Length: 164
Image 1: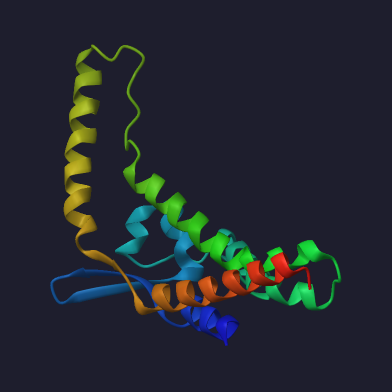
Image 2 (image 1 turned 30 degrees about the vertical axis):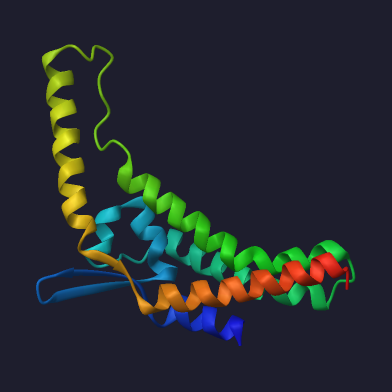
């Protein structure tokens, strides 16, 4: 049931929801790679690319990883139950770091006029991103997949400790 919950949460229900007034745009988990590379994709349409295809493949591998211990007798195979949770946490951390990093790189001579302008632009964008962050929330798919991932992780760790 947990794998089914993760599957539905990743592929059929919105993980992130951006709302601006009456306009709402949802991003499903399998499209999150586009948002990691370009955070504006949370508000606009996600483009289909080879990166998206590779990420869908990675999602499917992580989703099917908990089946591995039932074919392998090695005790460490139960750690595969952590794969969906690890993928979700890694994507969340990457998205957070991408949206909170500097938008423009400062020149070598930071005391120059151009360095001051770039510093001002980064400050302005960070203040604006705080405003934008209030309009982005976790959708039902994010909660559903996270709950399923936690259930799998707990089961995998229990079985790993028991050595079944």
